[in-house]
Amino acid sequence: MQDSGAEAAAGASYAYKASLIGSAHRFELTEEGLSWHIGGRSGLWRYDEISAIRLSFRPVSMQQHRFRADVSHASGGRIRILSTSWQTAALMAPQDNGFRNFIVALHARMAQAGSQAELTAGLGRRTYAAMLAFLAVLAVAMTALLVRALAISEFAGALFIIGFAALFAWQIGGFVRRNQPRSYSFDRVPSALLP
Image (cartoon, rainbow, N blue to C red):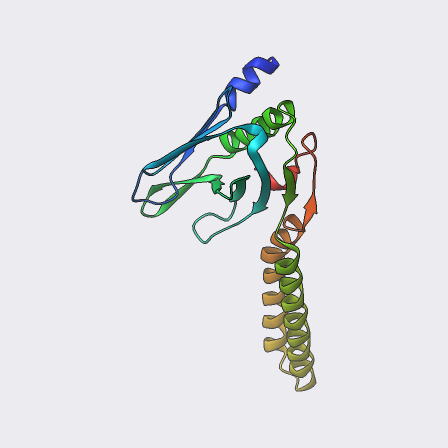
């Protein structure tokens, strides 16, 4: 078992490639604050100057298990940290342990610095409400199609609709559940939004 100093050192730096072309995005937790290097830009944000962190689950076609942290600065700047890195034109590799360790260590350092940052998880409330409304309309439409298929004895079509609905619910259900808008505290980072 690692001691807390070894755990802090393990999560003290993180890097990923946001695109196949371009340099890696590099982050380091220093004594002074969060040091970042993105392309030709770099900076150092003191932990007490970080105004907000939003954690979310953001799958994409090349990587269905991708997480994102949006870190905002009091001056209005924002950086994005992703849990995947481009390896080749057809491969996006997960970096689960590195991302999790870095995000947990960042929260611990901010708590030590007495940060008053707003910690939120999931999608924004309006976006989430719009998504739920869209899913409700889609569910009504699918139900109407199913009823129509059964009414005209089109059992193959009904079976297809049921199969499609089950696959859709399985794919979208995790996204909806993980991205429910909520606030959290430094000592309770939501595990559903960490790999």
